[in-house]
Amino acid sequence: MKKAVSGISETKNPQETDPLLRDQPWRWWRDRMPVAEHLAYFDHAAVSPMSGPGAQAVQHFAADASENGDSHWPDWASTAEKLRHQFCDLTHADPEEICLVPNTTHGINLVAEGWDWQPGDNVIVPEGEFPSNLFPWQNQAAKGVDLRVVPRRAGEVHVRDLIQRVDERTRMIAVSWVGYASGFRIDLPELVEEAHRRGVLVFLDAIQGLGVFPLDLRSTPVDFLAADGHKWLLGPEGIGVAMIRKEHLGRLRCGQVGWNSVKNAFNYAEPKLELRNAASRFEGGSLNLMGAAALHASLDIFLRIRSLHGEESIANRILSLSEILVEQLVRRGVRTRTHSEPKHRSGIVTFELPEITPASFRRLAFEQKVVVSCRDGGVRASVHAYNNEEDIERLLDVVGNPVR
Image 1 (tube, rainbow, N blue to C red):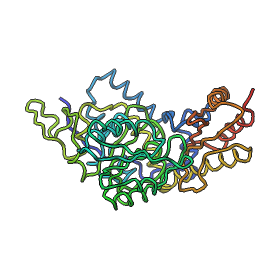
Image 2 (tube, rainbow, N blue to C red):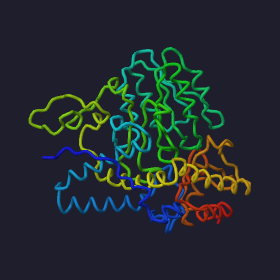
Image 3 (cartoon, rainbow, N blue to C red):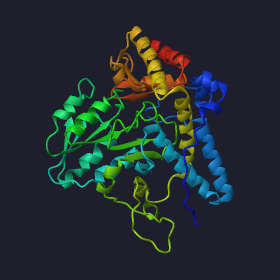
Image 4 (cartoon, rainbow, N blue to C red):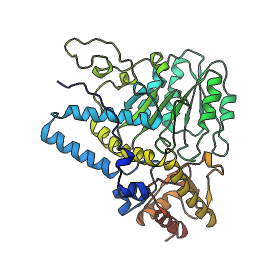
């Protein structure tokens, strides 16, 4: 029989770190990214390369599972609990508010399908959201819920535009922290403050910001959150996080329940449907423990950097590299969609090359071992902390010779 376990984050003590992490943290990080040996990779906003420690965790898990079956299942489950606590470290949430989910879409649907909607209620979303933060809310039309899509301004989401659409039947504003195509980062503290002042809850699709930008849910009390591990967090697909604030837990119907939803989950002989008093009630069945092991190993990189160099260090590094890319693109006469104010910038830089289609540029860049993507009619480069100026120069070389 599987045994119940618990765990805590095992992020290393800053005093125990090696000199390279202390003195050259970005080189230390880069050494843990095998992809950097042969690619200038700028597609983290789509699917990231897995970190070296993450890949090693998968290999170890697979070998253990093939050689020993579930003999070490308690250890695997303990790692998943450590992952839960790592997400607490990233967001300053309570462990009882963290739910491990397969993907962002799953986390969004926990709220969209679980909320006690009444006919005439409405939800507000900005124009240009990724479909996963649109369709679940549209799907509530069958319950009489109205979806209000607020136009962007030149690709930007303005808090005041969202708030102007609020009325007495608005229950929720669902918004991306960072636009997946534009890279525009919303003023999250302002949004939460203005929404809560009007009695409106905030759902945050955090997939393009979590791990990059600091988020303190004590001072910025987002009500619900979901994010995947396979983008900026450098983990595998199939494992992510949802956050449900404690005071809302009882207001969400648990639409899918299983053995792992209840308080005495391991009492198979006398099962009782008594839901856990925690967001883990939504986990239902068996978790992706191999994915959890990989994401746990990758998150350790983030938390070690933050613990030694500060919570703003990763964001500052990424914004600094992104600024270099934007400046060099502008110098070459390339139009970018990056906002002028740093508080609205992110690691996503989308630009336009009139002499070549985005798809053709992506193909050409890959031939030169540079990886970008195409979004919203432009070329999207998403810069991470382990990238360096040499990577940027490799991308700029392709920009300078787009037709071969």
